[in-house]
Length: 120
Image (cartoon, rainbow, N blue to C red; front, side):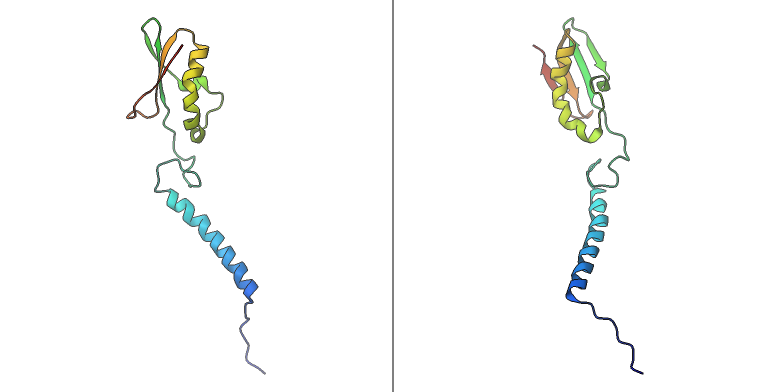
């Protein structure tokens, strides 16, 4: 009786194994790295686990009055990861739908500089 021999992996088997292991490592490493970046991050496990910071929207009326309004009034469906690109459009939209607004002031974060949009 001959001693058992260990199975040898062909070059193709080793390549397939390397691809599978690389794929699995990427599935763990990429989200783990994203945990240490500002949230929410694409491809991170925390992508939808924290509440978004809602921008502050202040309308300066032609009468001189200032009103802080809920920004969600101007979005049909607002998703936090898409909102940054949409915020540039809010000022012009508010001017179109509210005739008595002279200036739209938008703060993305409480400590950020305001974005101002003058209405025509």
